[in-house]
Image (tube, rainbow, N blue to C red; front, side, top):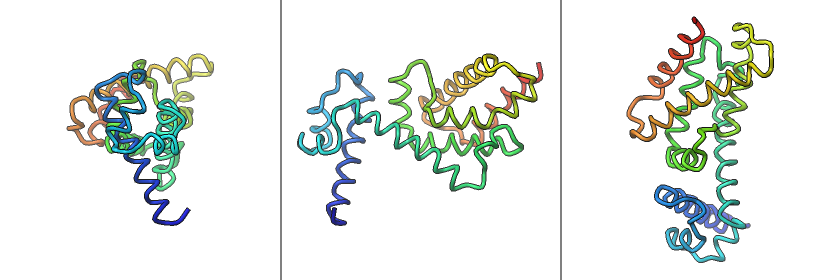
Length: 190
């Protein structure tokens, strides 16, 4: 694909994704049609189908793109993926929260589609990888106990982040990271 055509393809893809995110703010996914997206993005149906098979394929690819972005931010930083419970834990979490804030429209839609507040799989992997040393310190040996703790932490953290998004991301990522870690630290003391 030539450079201008490649750029056109990327621009069209971005229009489609932005239209989908905008529509998800007011409609449930099963009520959104390809025509709705095409109208909002000001493209024709054949352009949509040149990029995606259907609306669910679009959402799946958007999720994968976001997941890759999350992993990439840690690869481009000097923070190791296993630093989640290290002395740099607040910085580690602030990086993730900043990324979420930069992609708040996606996360607002994602959380609406996944009301159980389940975290995107790449973030779940980051939490699981980085939290093992902490669970060792707590004396958790059973995989089942670890899963319960991860689930508790995941749901609590995502509820805080969802509230932050819903209220306009007013606090800094560093403030939110501090707040979350204070809660985790207080729980670990009991």
